[in-house]
Length: 296
Length: 156
Image (cartoon, rainbow over the protein chains, first blue to last red):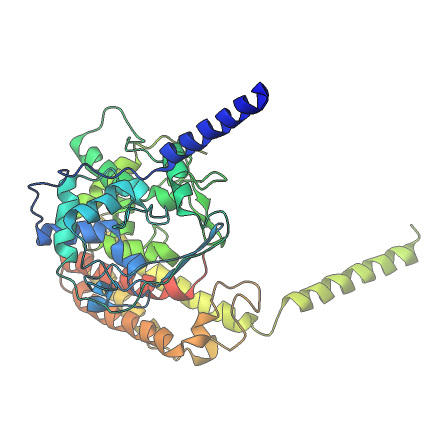
């Protein structure tokens, strides 16, 4: 065999090894959640701040039915259709057989119980900035919800996006636990940043994405195409959103804009969720939004 | 241009304009205008209550009661003729009304009822005090959003 051929084979092998290493799921250390005891009543606030029901409950659900997290919502995207899974405590169809550590791997590392990557339609790329305490509280609350015996449906994705291993490459390129807005922030603004950038995952819809679906954090919250292809999600940086802090608080509390039009589409679900939070949290979000770099 | 041909050209322009106006004025326009006017009326009266609720204007009991009373009245209109079949955003221009309204009429009517109930609560609150108005805003806003999230298309 010629030397050149040997060299080529070596390069291909090195490439494969690099691919394998980069795309491998990276779970939390075994003792990551050791000693953490979740508090279900605090977890209920995390649940509403995180908007879990908006994707995992029936979109028509009202009241107590919003706590039946059987999944099945279809999320259209450029890569195919994601079907939200059952995350109720049902041991067969939901996540009743998971441990806190399994749940933390999903929230903080984007990995499901069997060790495979979750798709980033599940916003672990925001949740990964959450505190372990909040994850434990949320887990304690989820355990109290009614089990739903509906099987999760497979995603309908086109090749090559159907290969879960590739999500590792996405994570390598686009997922980080760093804050986007840095610098001097008051404790209230920091609370707002924690909600907007982590738990409430506002950037997932309000920040534009590149061709591979990675968030363009250089244009943080500057508005984006609606992932389902209909219309645009607005720019909420100070360059476009001229509302006062009181206007933002009123909008997130009631769903009514300063013109007394109302939130529609997915944002109406977000407003419903925000209605469960203390006013101080909504005020913190408004304070943080004023600190976001203006983008035209 | 000779006077006659100028006149002809003018006539042709008028006819073209009239024809395009006729094309633009579809049979659903009246109903769409009526329901959008109804929404504007709701927003105008909500503006009084919301302005007080967020501190943009002082609480004024009689103004609050007038606005809340108007909202209750607006929610008692029989809107049957406002929502003719075929006036959704897939069939005609100038509306954000989604076809789902006609697929799920019971759910749609249920939201109308939610708004009426929230408006009645607001009417009570308007005669009480500012904090009652602030508390009732969430119910009214929630009723608006509850319907819009399923039955109204995004604005662009």
